[in-house]
Amino acid sequence: GEATGNLANFQDNSATVA
Image (cartoon, rainbow, N blue to C red; front, side, top):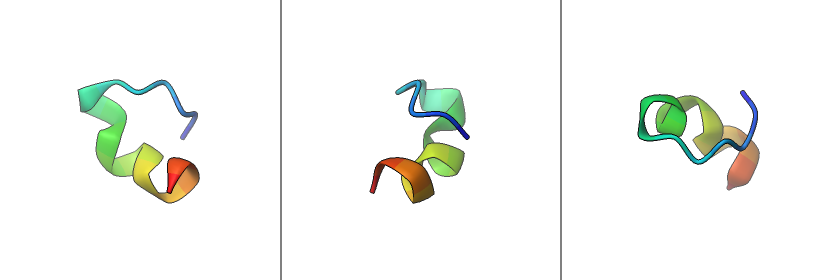
C-alpha cells in the first residue's frame, strides 16, 4: 500500500515504509 501513515493501513504500509 501507499505510505499514507494511516493506522488502518499500517500493516500494509509497513512493507513499503520500512
